[in-house]
Length: 158
Picture 1: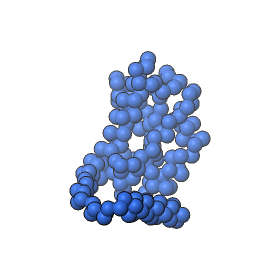
Picture 2 (picture 1 turned 90 degrees about the horizontal axis):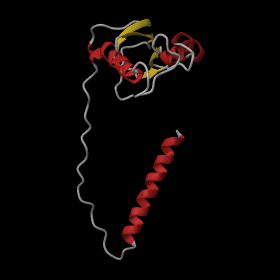
Picture 3 (picture 1 turned 180 degrees about the vertical axis):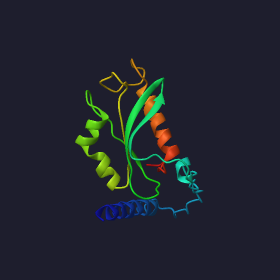
Picture 4 (picture 1 turned 135 degrees about the horizontal axis):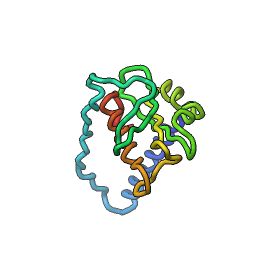
């Protein structure tokens, strides 16, 4: 709980600086004008939180950019919403190896995360950067996140 104490000390210090600065001016401190506070907006729940189709753990495909793309999915227990992690493999590796070596799907799901481990396009060794040559991997990852949001109860803020 040390982090909370540090915030309290910083806030107290900031308040002392403001009070001291106002007291040193020789004039009576003015009351701060009423500052409107922002009303927090609550985003509607993602489609997947309303029920309906739900992805299962395991290997899945998604059609994107005229290519069939593969991703592995690990799911936490409970209804959610759950944060999402993308577990990207390195050069020359693949989704299966990344899932095994990183152990992120198992550990992430145990800690309450949806973990998607996507595969680069067939015949490619690495992810394609935006405006690069080859398949649009940035678009693919966006489409993957959209699908997860539609078919699982995910936390959009995380």
